[in-house]
Length: 271
Image (cartoon, rainbow, N blue to C red):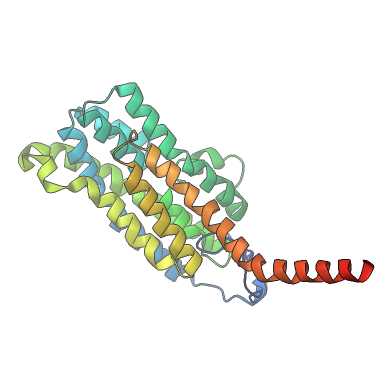
């Protein structure tokens, strides 16, 4: 953890390559104090970790036992997939279908891992354990960090805080589900997605990013009533290539017209 290796400029909040003029060289980016990284990581870990209470309540309300609920948080540890699983079960879905939907929803974490593995460059022996903490929130905290040291601190503090709190609050929620009565009336299943949206919104700085996010929301909400749980979220990722394709066509438009005019003039001279 002693190195101060600067991350490439492409390791921004979205992990996208900027289409504009090149930014400052990586070595010119100011280092972020460790205390500031820890503060940001704790803020995310505590805010999201407390929403494990909502999962505990929802899971118990859907018919899962205390042991099943706690094991899900300990071993699965990805809120969206956990909520998708218990939601499908509560709706009367087949357990295998519910598990498949939750699995496909969690596939996105594998793509996060591909990016984070390059940034963190953790020792080989540590990687299997770190992989368990590759989720939306740890990715959101890790990617914007200016150095490898800051990225490792952000990932570790966020993952540890969130894992401990999520599991503790899951236990408390499952134990207190009976005291709350009808859990559907509380709408607690919306807590985790709401927290993630609050984390994501400030990261959408460009018009392209906002349009992509908006189109993804429209796709997910449109497909939600007609497709199994988890599938609409996966298909909403199609918003990214669609927006990139349209943006590329818009940028190529004037250049294409100039090129076509030059070709016409060249043809007229040879005729």
